[in-house]
Amino acid sequence: MDTNLYINGLVKGDSKIISSIYDTTFYKIKRFIINNKGNAEDAEDIFQKALLQLVVRAKKEELVINTNFEAYFFTVCKNLWRRELNLHKKRVTDSGVVELISESNENSLAIIEQKRQELFIEKLNVISENCRLILSLFFQKRSYAEIVAKTDYNSETVVRQRVFKCKKKLTDLIKQDARYNSLIEL
Image (cartoon, rainbow, N blue to C red; front, side, top):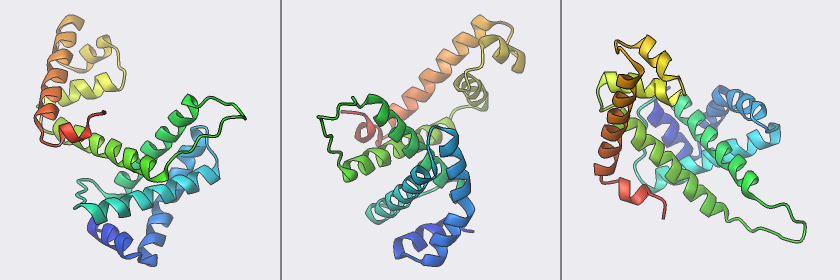
């Protein structure tokens, strides 16, 4: 199904589109969350937050998705769940202290995080194919020896230098983008 059809259906509150999104993606999202310290209720909460986030964002600005909707929505849910896990990690458990967390503030932070990821992926697709391969392996936490084996480079030293140069090129491209300043943490 067309990505724009999903987005427009969400904005209009089309129950058929929402059911279709639920049918095609919820099981994967639920499985991911259960496999990562969550439960079915957490999956439902994250799913709803992700739908809400997309609707708010689509109403606020033109939402351009350069991949299929399912993959994009799964990534949004994954990012929301990781943020949720990080929040629980940072909280001090004290029954005498009650934390008030603004739902809109959480949604805003999640949207910013998603925009950062989109900018990163966009700029990653601009650098050379060789740099993409090297950085992809590097981000997968492959050892330099493994990267040497998968590329035409002769030594780990050369790969280290290439990783450094590719990361610098990617960082420079990101920082040159007009959206960068609005997405950095304050």
